[in-house]
Length: 278
Ligand code: ADP
Image (cartoon, rainbow, N blue to C red; front, side):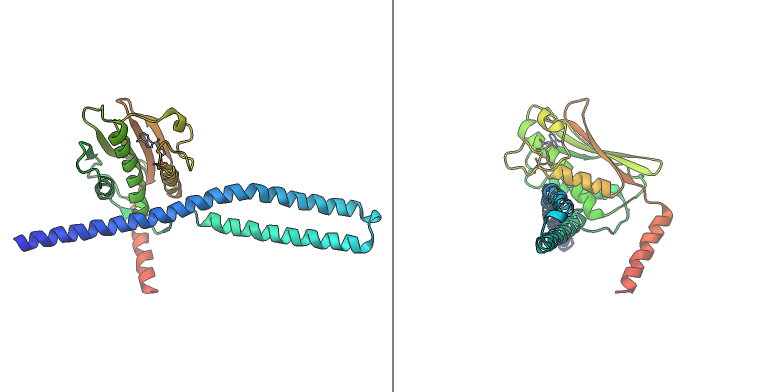
C-alpha cells in the first residue's frame, strides 16, 4: 500500500512539474509575442510615413523633370526606387512578426473544462499554499466539451486565477473569506466561463484599458497577462470582458466554442493523420 501511495505521489508531482514547465514555456513565448506586437505597432507608423515621403519625392522629381538634367533625374529615380524596395522589405518583416504573435499551437481538440480548471488552480496556488484563499472549481460535471488548445486554455485560466489570488493576497486582507470561484454554463454552441474573486476590485486607472498590453498597477508587473488572455480567447473565436462583482471584487467572463461530436471525430482523424504521416 505504501509503495503504491509513494508512486502515486511521484506521478502527481511529475505531472505538476510537466504542467509548470509547459506554462513557463508558453508564457515566455507569449512575452516575446507581446514585445513583438508592441514593436510592430511602434515601427509600422514611421514606416508608413517614410513610404509616403518617398512617394512624394518621386512625384516631385517627376513634376520637376523639365528643370533637372538627365543624370540627376536618373539618380533621383534610382534612390527613390531603392528606398521603396527597402521599405517594402521592412513591411514584409513586420508582417512576418505579426504572424508570430499568437502563442504557439493551433491544434485543438475536444476537452473537458473541469480538469483544465483543476490544473490551473493547482498551478496558480503555488507559493500561496499557506494563505486563507479558497479556490472553488464550480464548473458542472456534465458541461459539454470545448474545442480548444488545452495548453493555451490552461495559460488563460492560470493568468486570471493568479491575478485574482494576487489581488486577494495583497489588498484583499479585509475580505472575511477570500475566495476565487470558477463557474461555467453552456448555451447554444458556446460555453461561458467566469472567474470571480471577492478582492478589492479593479483600480480605476486600469479599468478602461484592462486588456491592452503594458497596463499594470503592480510594481514588478509587465501588464501582458490580460492582453495574452484576450489573444487566446479571440484566437478561439470568443470574447472576454471584466465586470465589478456585485459582492465586491472582479468577475472575468470569456467564451469558448462547444466541441460537436463531428468535430471530435474530425480532430481524432487529424490526429491519426498527423501520426500516420509521421
Ligand atoms: P500584470 O499582472 O503584470 O499587472 P495583467 O495584464 O495580468 O498584468 O493585469 C493588469 C492589471 O489588471 C493588474 O496590474 C491589476 O491592476 C488588474 N487586475 C487584473 N486582475 C485583477 C483582479 N482579479 N482584481 C483586481 N485587479 C486586477
